Length: 259
Image (cartoon, rainbow, N blue to C red; front, side, top):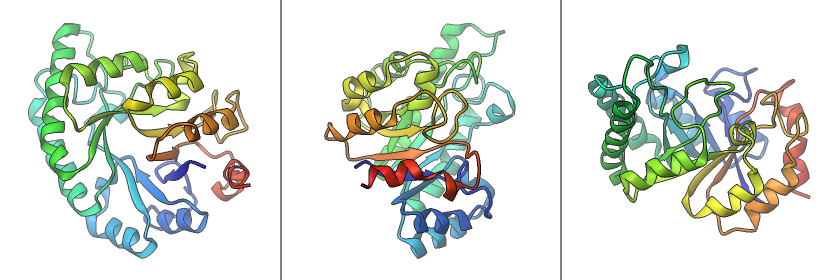
């Protein structure tokens, strides 16, 4: 059975943010992840982690204006200083929380800039993040995000994400494979997980379409979880979905894997 993590930025929204860690533990998750933990003090997250004994699977690097529809930081020439400040802020949280992975969101290439200049900026910023954060013993991961939800996202396929990882060629770099995003891009998920596993350090999932819990869309999660189990993957498999009701009522998929 995969080791499941709860993305508490999306799950357990009926609780205050820090209280979601205990809720995840009570439901049997072995880890939690937070997309952007920076609005709360490090100490608040650290107390919740220590009280529950859960691992932190992933935090994201700060991403500038990305979540408000902007291009973000990583692929924008001229924002290198902001990107390095984001790495420094993430390092403070990582030193205390010791996440397994730190996710670098590639963002968009602004239309007014040359695409190759944006790709070069992304490569150099990715290298900087790996060199800065790798000594902490974490993986710096990059993920492909579907262009239906995020038009213009600079990494939208697994092959593009792997091309970036291979071009930077740093031992701390790895792939974060998101089942939902790749299904939305018509990628054969089970085959891709099997083929790409040597490069994967983290997996996230939601059903597709809709981005809700397993069983609400088209993905055969029995086959997905079996494919993961068939490899030697020892990382976390994170539920990152929008619950259709209270989170506790959407965990039938988890109970089924335990049988």
